[in-house]
Image (cartoon, rainbow, N blue to C red; front, top):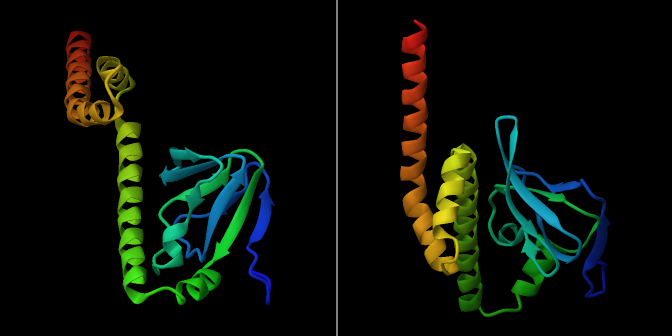
Length: 180
């Protein structure tokens, strides 16, 4: 923020720019004005996409209130225009608000971080799921309302995945017995 001005900084990030890195302390949040951002996590050397965000999305907001490192990486999928909100600027604005409202906001930020962890866990789980199991379950729940589809996917997918992996292991075992 410019001294003496109440204007937030706007930046253009080039495609491929990683501007928030997991594990690092990030003292900024960003509002995407144009372009797209991908958030991802790493499992060893493998990159696992967690979400894709466009104009109007606020990212990195929990760091404005909570002193915890960010859990995900954020990369410009296209050229991206963002408005940057620093922790200092946010805290200055927050100081003008009633304490009970600040407490509500802090609790909301904690819930958002938990939601982010859940989304990251989902992405990691799907990464480990057999592609055939995922396709089968997606086909079964296609056409259901979003909330029901997600509910049935979370219930069915582990079982179907286990079944398919078990059948594949059994086939491999039989093949190795015939070969030996």
